[in-house]
Length: 235
Image: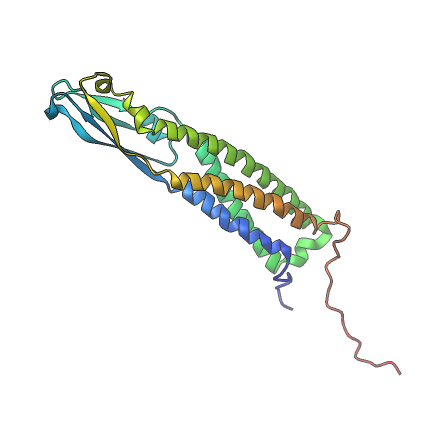
């Protein structure tokens, strides 16, 4: 007998959408790296630095808590070491972790739906476990997406060149001129937050399709086997 027991048009295969969106969510966040540039023009032009480059990347711990750059003090050739502030790794890593585990679960679930659907339906255990896990993931997407949205807001503040300029001592003196040269591109991180909330909607919606496979749903028919035809004709 064939192992393909699930109808390809079954609503359970809706789970392939959360699978792809989970990839988009954790990849856009986990692979991010950004850079911004500033210039410090001293009264004495020879002491200026017109291209101060600051790089940062996921998980936004070392970049925003331990990463530093050297800025001119506009006093001879002395340099001032400036550290970025904040540690926003917890929300970013939590978001990526949920995305990775969601992808792994959807991959395993799809394999079970397609190749082991008879065992999945046996004694209603499979649908009940699936319903609980799906509900947990929907809730975790809500928590992780909200936490990462707040974390991203903090990352943007910590990497705003205008805010960083205020930390440079030479920029507090009127005879020196400081300005931003290049803002960090945050579109990838904005997209990751959007994918997080899309995953929340998809997993919440998938709860209905999984619930329909349980015995609690009155209209869910039991798994049927193909009827055997009687080869003997009645006289």
